[in-house]
Image (tube, rainbow, N blue to C red; front, top):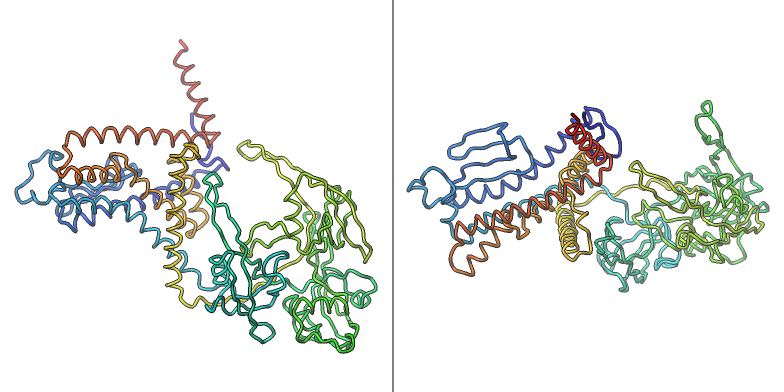
Amino acid sequence: MRLTARVGGAKSAGPSDQALDLVYFVLFVSSLIFIHELGHFAFAKLFRVKVLTFSIGFGPKLLKVRGKETEYCIGVLPFGGFVKMLEEGKTDAPILPEDRGRTFEAQALWKRVVIVLAGPAMNIVFPVALYTSVYLEDREFLPPTVGVVFPGKPAEGKLFAGDVVVAIDGVKVGSFPDVQKAFAKRAGSAVRVQVERDGKVVDVAITPADEVEVVEPAELELYEHVGRVGIAPSFALPVIGVARTDSPAFRAGLRTFDRITAVNGRKVDTFVDLVRVLAQNRGDNVVLTYVRPQAAPRALGGLADLAVLETGIASLAPRPPEEGATTRDADPAARERDVLGRTGIESAEMYVAFVPEGSSEWRAGLRAGDRITHLDGVAARMWKVDRRGGHVLDDTTLVGMLFREPNRTRELVWTRDGERMSGTFQLRRERWDDELGQNYARYVFRSTHWAPRATPKLVPNPSPVLYAVRRGFEQTGNAIKFIVVGFVRIVQGRVSLAAVSGPITLYDVAGDAGAKGTTYFVWAMAVTSVNLGLINLLPIPILDGGHLMLFLVEWIRRRPVSLRTRERVSLVGMSVLVLLMLVAFKNDVTRKREWWDVIRLQVRELTSDSRSP
């Protein structure tokens, strides 16, 4: 009888996949153990302590190399390692006179502390190098340009799409991550922002909102206060909405979801560019080139529903501006209002692209092409937050307001060809089972808009090495904080011991990370290395933290702890460690329901077989 379920439970895998996972697991674990033991070994050698054995893995030796005085080994079981140093009472052969000063016990207390501490320290320092190697790939960043301003946020009315952030509180910024980081550190404090707008440098005062973020998993109750002003770097493509049939845009043949590609032969890449060009028009005819998506249902022999882009040209005659009116020096919001009033062109942000037939919105009367204006009497100005901008769901957007109270009836107001319409509906609640049989439920809003974003031009990282090292230290610090809080929460009883994972979960992590690529593998290794280092610092006898605890007792008593006491303490430590390993293994197996069911079935079969005559 054999197990057929793949470790991980998410999907089945063939022998080649399982072999590859095993390779990832061995490489993953062995690398971390090697780094840990290398710390002990290096400082033992530095202090001239005689090292008898340096082993990665336990059990029978797969490989053994004899050095001048040290035997280097690789064991068959890659679940640990050890550095065996010359110690009194722990070697069968007598200690030679010339080696008396090279035993571990013969060293000064501070040297023994350093040797023991070096292993966990290497596991905590190693991630800095790993994270640094990952961040060295960040050679380009998003530019410090405002692409979107979220409604109801501190930046509304102060920053506008197209603004280029030059400096924050006098400190120059060169990328959008710099902008985010500067605002994040100034939650609740007034900030002076210098932006370049229409060729001029403008000073703006903004107070970033103090937003509380919950660090996952939520059980840790770990919160971070972050300052945000409500901007994102992605620009909307020049996809237009045409709300009224009596507008110049409609008469010119333009329709909602047309993407303008050029104005009088001049290419436009974003909606901001389109508004800027049209705002300069004084009433003269302009030629707009556009592409229009045309639905092609059941294309490719019924395999898919597609949209085909058709090109077209429209001659637009904007209404002339009012006498004395000028938009040259107006802010971008005023220019958008001017363009809408004189041409009938606006952003397609709030226009519905798709409404599933039979959905609650459909039954309320909403159709593709409608422009949503209000939800429960509140103006809807943005469909949802673009997650690519590094922001989470926001309750000032349409989708955010819907999911803030998903279980009640909502009133939606929209326009169709300029006519106001309304209807009531409630979000649909869907249920499904995952591959492990767990039942889930969630509310869904299936209607969608179509507001594609332009691909931004990236700016080079001015100091990639310094940036990578700094980020390496930051991420290592975050990992240490996360794991320490996890330990504290378990001790406090606020997080269950079921959160403790063992080798099966580690096998999963290594396999999944390896399958996703080198970056994911290195990232997972860095977090696990910090975890390993901190676990070894726990004051459990037999672990490095237990040895440090005995050194503390020795320092207080002014004499070493007896060998017999150390042996007894080590036995207690081994018992605790075995207990923790059993808990971790039980948690792993419980998470893998298929494994647990198969194991119980095998035990039942073996029991019944042993009882049968």
